[in-house]
Amino acid sequence: MAIKIHAIKCGNVSYVGSKTKYGVYCYLVEHPEHGLILIDTGLNADAKDTWPKYLLAMEHVEITKEETALYKLGKMGISADDIDLLLLTHLDADSNGAIGDFAGRVKRIILPEHEYFYSCRTVYKMRQPQNLWLQYKNLMDIPYYEAVKIGPQGRGYDVFKDESIVFIHTPGHTEGHASVMIGTAGSGRLLNNDGIYFGGRYVMFSADGEFKPMTFDKKGQAKAEKYFDDVRKDPDCLMIYPSHSADDLCGYMEII
Image 1 (cartoon, rainbow, N blue to C red):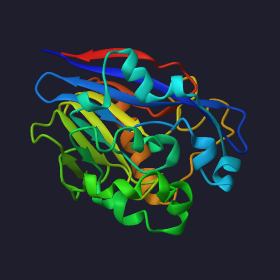
Image 2 (image 1 turned 90 degrees about the horizontal axis):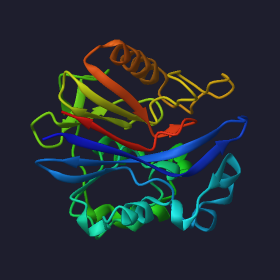
Image 3 (image 1 turned 120 degrees about the vertical axis):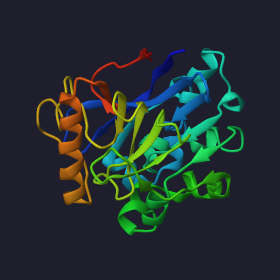
Image 4 (image 1 turned 90 degrees about the vertical axis):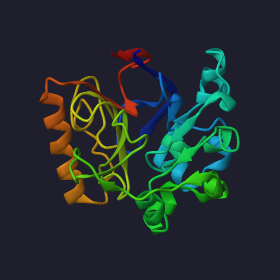
């Protein structure tokens, strides 16, 4: 049976210094053996009330209750209780502000230990308000990255030990940032999350070149960008998808 991937748009963000409006995406994976897997949660409906004012000044947020992942999954006939696994690629508020919609209801949550470890840095505390996620820490599995065959660092986490869902350590945007390979280690679809941004086509930054993603590990970011570019050129890779895009990515894809 095929693995199905649904791209779910959860509002929009725009950034200081950029005219481009980026959709915020999370992804639902229907796995024939491992059930329903949600990758990231997107924006929370009450972001304008729960985010710090300085963060709202940096990121202009557009989100309604009807645009949240929880609501859109409900329209698909899926509740939070039906989700077998929630994978958190990193803790930034735009990508995972809605953890509270799912924590305590999904069967399992995984956050890479490297991302959790570095969340204590002031620069990440500013982007990852602890009121949005820290209270749910005890509900999370927090595994260490291990040696894997793929990725710019050769580190990751094979979630089911069958190479069908693999966290790949792709530092840059944050030091613990993960991308997700869905399919097999040699082929499939790569969800790059905030590793690079898309704007209208495959580009490292926005389509008009005016905005460069925030990065705090420049060497890691450079290696990640090269890896993404190599994967893009690999005929065995079906597609790379971001968590922010100026394009409309909604719909679903299949991996046979």
